[in-house]
Image (cartoon, rainbow, N blue to C red; front, side, top):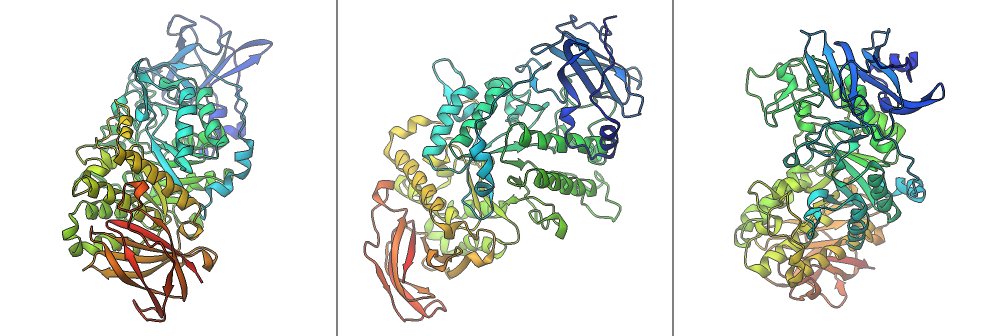
Amino acid sequence: MAQVKVHSLFTEFDINLFKAGKHYRLYEKLGSHIVTVDGIEGTYFAVWAPTAKQVSVVGDFNYWIEGEHQLNVRWDSSGIWEGFIPFVTKGNVYKYKILSNNNNIKTEKADPYARRCEHPPSTASIVWDDNYKWKDAKWMKKRKKHNALDTPYSVYEVHLGSWKRHLEEDRFLSYFELADELVNYVKEMNFTHVELMPIMEFPYDPSWGYQLTGYFAPTSRFGYPEEFKYLVDKLHQNDIGIILDWVPSHFPEDAHGLGFFDGSNLYEHPDKRKGYHQDWKSLIFNYERNEVRSFLISNACFWMEQYHADGLRVDAVASMLFLDYSREDGEWEPNIYGGRENLAVISFLKELNEEIYSSFPDVQTIAEESTAFPMVSKPTFVGGLGFGMKWMMGWMHDTLEYFAKDPIYRKFHQNDITFSLAYAFTENFMLPLSHDEVVYGKNSIIGRMPGDEWQRFANLRLLYGYMFTHPGTKLLFMGGEFGQYNEWNFEESLDWNLLEFEPHKNTQNYFKELNKFYKSTPALFEKAFTGEGFEWISYDDHQNCVISYIRKGYKPENNVVVVCNLTPAIREKYRIGLPVKGKLKEVFNSDAKEFGGSGVSNSKAITIKKTPWNGKDYSAEITLAPLAITVFEFNT
C-alpha cells in the first residue's frame, strides 16, 4: 500500500470548536492543502466522515485504485480522516472513496471543501491553490462607505452564462472576458453593485446554479479560481461592489455531492420531513448538527475572506424558516412549542449574521424572504435574524400587478401601488425585479406593460422611476434595463441586437441616467429605511391615478418632490400640496425626448403659493407628462 504520512493541521482547540459548531474557518483545515512535510512537497487531505470504517483518496495519481492511499481516522471522535500524500500537488484530480460502517455501503465523493472542481459533467475535485495578488486595497479600505445603509445601492443581477455569449464560438465568456465586458458595461450603466446568481460549482445548468456541489469552488465553466478573483478585483477597481448568491437552504442528490456522504445522513437531516425539499427534489441541511452549521458559516466567511465578496444574498430563506413550507398537514412536525418555525434555522441564521458582521463589518447580507416573518433585517440583540436587508416581495407583486393593468382601470386599484408604504419601514427592504419575474411564462417586464409600443415603454420608464424613488435599495435583473422582450433563457445570450432599435436604446439610456440621478440625489438613499425619509403628499387621487410624495435626506435643502402620473393623459395645472414656500424646479422627467418620451415638461421654475392643499400650508400647479414620473427640487 502506498504511503500516507500521519500529519494534521488541526489543533485540539480546532476540534473542540468544530464539535461545538463554532469553527468558522474550516476551509483552512478540511479539504486538500499543498504542504511540505519532512522536506517533501505533497498534499494534506482531511474529510469529515464519522460513519466511515475506511476512507481512501483516489485520483489520477494512483489510477483511482481504492485502498492505495488510506487516510487515518483521528482519535478524538471528531469523525475526521486525514493524512499527507507525498508528491500529490496542484492540478491532481481526486475523490474520496468511503467504506461505511452502515451496511458496508460504499460512496465516492467529491471533496466538500475543494477549491476547484472539474468542468461538469465531470465531477472530481482538483488539488488547487493560488497566490493571486489583489489590487483592490483602495476599495477594501473604503467599501464600508459603499455598502452602508445610507448610501446608494443599485444592483445589477447577472447570470454569467447568459449575460452575453461568444457568438462565433458558441461558448460562455470567460472570467477574463467578463472582467472587461461586464465591468465596463456595469460602470457605464451607473450601477453600484453586481449580484451574481450562484457561481459556486454546480452540476446541472438548468438549475441556474441553485443546486450546488462545490461550495468552496467558483464554477469551472468560466475559468480558474484566480480568474474569478481577477473579475472581482476589476469590479472593485472600478468602484463596483459584488454580491454573491448563496444557497444554504438545500443541495442536490447527485452521487458525488454531499448527500448520504459517508453512508449516513451526514449533511442532510435524517427525518425526511426536515431533510427533503419536495419542490426542488433536493436535500435540506441538518441545521441541528453542529458540524453542519460550522460548514455553512465557514463557507459564507470563505467567500468574504478569500474572494473579497461585498455581500451575500441568501436564497430561499422562507423555505428554511418554516417546517410546513410546501408541506401538507401530516407532512411536518411542529417545534417544541407547537409552532411552525424551525428553531434550529432561526438560531443558525442569527449565528451566521453575527459572525459575518463581526468579522466583516463592511459587508451586507440580504435575505430572499417572502413571508411576514418578523425582524428579518433587525439586529440579533433586539431579537432579529440579523440580516442587513430583505427583499420586498410584496412591493414587487403588487407593483407588477398594477402596471399590467390598462390605465383606464388603474383608478380602481390605487391601493396596489400605495400599500407598500404601509409597511415599508418594518424592515430594511430591497426592491427586487429579479430573474424569478421573467421566467416560466410570467413574461418579460416590458412584455407585461399594457398599451401600444409607445405606452409600453413609457410605462416601463415610469415603473423604474417609481422603483428608484420608492424607499429601499434596488435590484434589476439583466436585460430589464433595455426592455428585453423575450423571457430570460439561461441557454442564450441577452438580445443585445435590440439596441439597434430606438425604443430599446432610449430605454437603456434612461436607465443609465436614472441610476446617475439616484446616486447623485441624497434624499433618495440617505434615509431609505426610515419613515423620516418619506412623506406622502397625496396617495388618494385615484380619479386621476396620480401619486405624489416627498423624499428626504439628512439636509432639508436636499429634499425632492416626486409625482407619478399613471395614465397617458397630460395633466396641466395639477395642484400638489407642499410644506414650504419658494420655488419648484424640475430635475428629472421620464417623458424626456432623449428617453423616447413626448417631451412634456415644466421648463421654468414654479412658484409655490400660500394656498393650502393636500393638508399642507402651501401648494403649486405643475404639468404632468403622460405615463411619467417627474421629480422636483425645492429652491427656497
